[in-house]
Image (cartoon, rainbow, N blue to C red; front, side, top):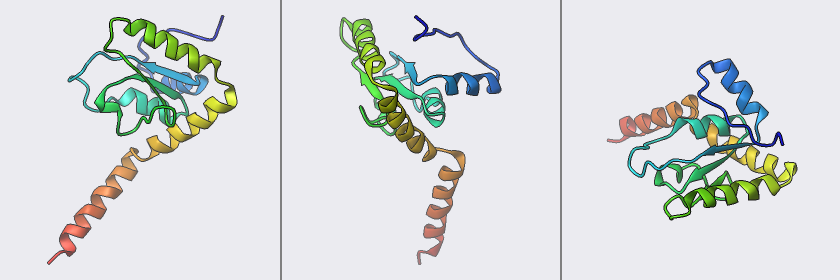
Amino acid sequence: SGRVEWLGPIFDETELKAQYRSCMIFAYPSLAETGEAFPVAPIEAMANGCVPLVSDLSCFRDYIADGVTGFVFDHRGERAAEALGNRLACLLRLGRNELAKIGDAARAKAAEFAVEAVAQRYLNDFASLVAQP
C-alpha cells in the first residue's frame, strides 16, 4: 500500500538522487559471493540517508554494521527470499525515528568513503611515507 516500490534502473543522476531521498530503506540483495568488490549503489543510498538492507557478503562489512549503519540478511539458505522478506518486514515495522537514526549513521559512514575523504587519506599516507628516513 505505497510502502514498497519496485524500480528499474535509473541512469539520470538527478532522478537517482531524488529517488534515494524519497526512500528510507534501500534493498540490495546480491548472490555474487565473489563478484562484488565494492558495490557503489548501497554507498550512494547511504549517502542520501537510506538504510541499506544487503546480503551477508564480505564486500559490505567495511561499511554496513548490522543494526547500526544498515541491515544484513542471510542469502545463502534454501529460504533466502523468505529471509529477505522477513528482514524487510522488520524494517518496515521500525518507526520513522528509528529508521532516521540509522539513516543518519549510514550517511556518516558513507561520508568516510567520499572521494575527498579517501583522497585525503591517500595524501596523509604519502606524506608519512615521504617523511620517513
